[in-house]
Length: 420
Image 1 (cartoon, rainbow, N blue to C red):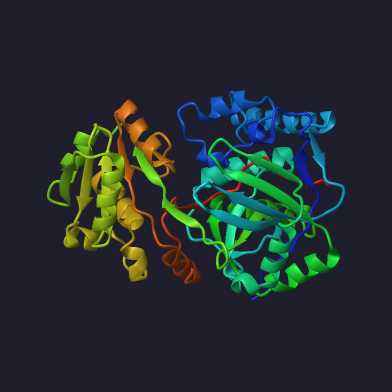
Image 2 (cartoon, helix red, strand yellow):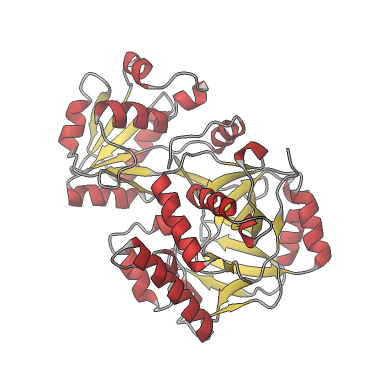
């Protein structure tokens, strides 16, 4: 196996705060987390320079969208809306909320590696059409527009990288802002050659788990293969967090089944799962789901004004539908049973068709969309991080969109142009 993680400094592109309404107004969640019914419109209206105009351009065709994003980026650079920092650096990035959550990590350009190298571990499958879409956008803009989130297990507070991160965070930041979700964000530059060298030596001993951004990592690998090395495409923009020092939150990603009313979804489960109707608020329904998930596979269905706990699957059904030859930890995952048994066998819904299924991070939004559209929301209980990491180490990928690690980095605080 090659050396471990190789995180290198780069000249970040950042908004000029004098040219925008506020730094908070130009940020966005990652491209695949803009889930509110008016989410895209809301962000576009927040500021004419909001980052969604680059990561989710709106036009009639895919090629027109990508061309528009490239033209927008060039215009913002020419107008000084986005400016490049004067020298390459790593960036210390901090997120903090009102509930005591504190996360710090390093933003840098990470050398792109192959799965066989064992340096960056994916834990989910990807959808080829999403990778193709992100690749087209990156080709058009020649930029990494938002960092993906990676985690590694350092040596806690005594680790060299963590000491540098925390020492840097004692200085005045390059920027500080609070977004409408209540998170405060701060960013610092690490430019000292001795510090960046010490970080490089420390990280070379570690491997990382992709926490969020599997499609963008697959995109980095696709684009690296298209360009002779060495080139800027050998690297991709990431946020790297030591979860021994700053544990992440792990949440589930839910499913919205278009065109499948709850009544039909429940009828198809007859004889296969136990179903119980819950006339309780969302928080209480999720607590009931958590209790049921301790005993085995369990899901909540919603969309008809109530919640329906679905659990205790027929063992014979699981034996027929869940693929063998995988670790027991994979075969018993809720996401595995959802895709192999419920989607493929019971409901016969193609998991890679946006016309049939949507993947949504926000629990309440999933329920609201199902009730409004007449579909079925399938709510899952989150997987523990240690299960995710152990499966990844074994080279076993989970069903796509199985987990949501967070907090996720805000898009728009720092970008990477490949021609700098």
